[in-house]
Length: 448
Ligand SMILES: Cc1cc2nc3c(=O)[nH]c(=O)nc-3n(C[C@H](O)[C@H](O)[C@H](O)COP(=O)(O)OP(=O)(O)OC[C@H]3O[C@@H](n4cnc5c(N)ncnc54)[C@H](O)[C@@H]3O)c2cc1C
Image 1 (cartoon, rainbow, N blue to C red):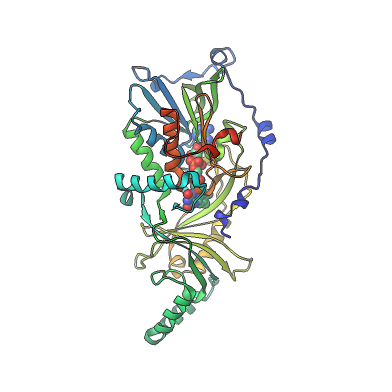
Image 2: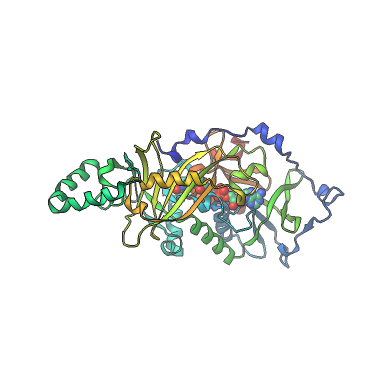
């Protein structure tokens, strides 16, 4: 079973709910408390966030990953979004901009076989629509892609590359026939030439053609954000939401910290889409983070890399079975990611630690089955935290209390499921009900 699609691996809870409560007390501060003496002296109302005519709905999105950024896109394109009546503000904790976490460092597979089924169909269709409407192929690397499961042996680096070149030369014309027969027997598609045939035990498609596609997740997320900004989204970077302010049970604002100290943004509606960090704002959310490493390799320009996503099981490299996922991308790079680990979640996405040893193992594994990857240049070594629902299931999508909405816990399918989630959130917040899907089984009351 592949590392990122084996749901059971994600349900290993590293922090229990009780520990979360113990580490940070969440307080629902009333409007009176907000104006009271307990407030830090430098706390200010950010007046730049008011328009001259005060909007009736002041929507604040916490978190600029793919979920928050895509939600901003759908909100600002909703028929009820009229600049003077509705404001949308997105707060992102990273000082480097949006998509610095999992949403910028994921593989980018979009699949009809993703889960949960409630949100998959609408998400896939919306991905197709978004790509058509905004030139997704050029803008965020949208394309349909074949996806398959590859099993075989790895060839250790030392001394193996010259041996491979010699063997390939010796194939010539007559051996081409037996090679084709061998490929067929192993199930290897004719155009999947960037994995070594002689190391392949089997290849089998995981979905029919047209059932899987891909995006470049960083480009998709930043495009959603830019398109939302064109319609009036206000963005605050380096701004960490610390508390939801309430009067009674009604949301009144969001308290935040940034480089200048702290402040408060008035809000009628708050959407928590802070990925693995969501419990920092609402501790009762059963979300934990699982760190995973990935690398991006630029392949030699002379070698065409056919559009495949491979879920591999590689033996022969010393330590059991290695299961990197490998994603060919249209920009001439190949992305690969490895399994999750138990590293604790840092306070801020900018503080995620990248272990070079984990990236080295990934590089060794993928290089061991492909000359194109072995001969490529590693452009990125990175790590990020996957938001996992610790009690199983999820994502959690819906309204938690008056004015407070949750959209998080997308585990390994947040890229695929972002458009459906975001469309549903925009309907819930601006129409009062989700029209595009039935999300009852994902509503917060089932998890909180
Ligand atoms: C290695 C790997 C490969 C993956 N591959 C795929 C794939 O191929 N297909 C797929 O569908 N999914 C994939 N996923 C899953 C996908 O990446 C996630 O489900 C998705 O990115 C989650 O998005 P998010 O917006 O919820 O969270 P994030 O991307 O983590 O974004 C949350 C944002 O909130 C910000 N934030 C946190 N706290 C605060 C705060 N208090 N105030 C303000 N901002 C805050 C963070 O800085 C961050 O930018 C993969 C994940 C991993 C780890």
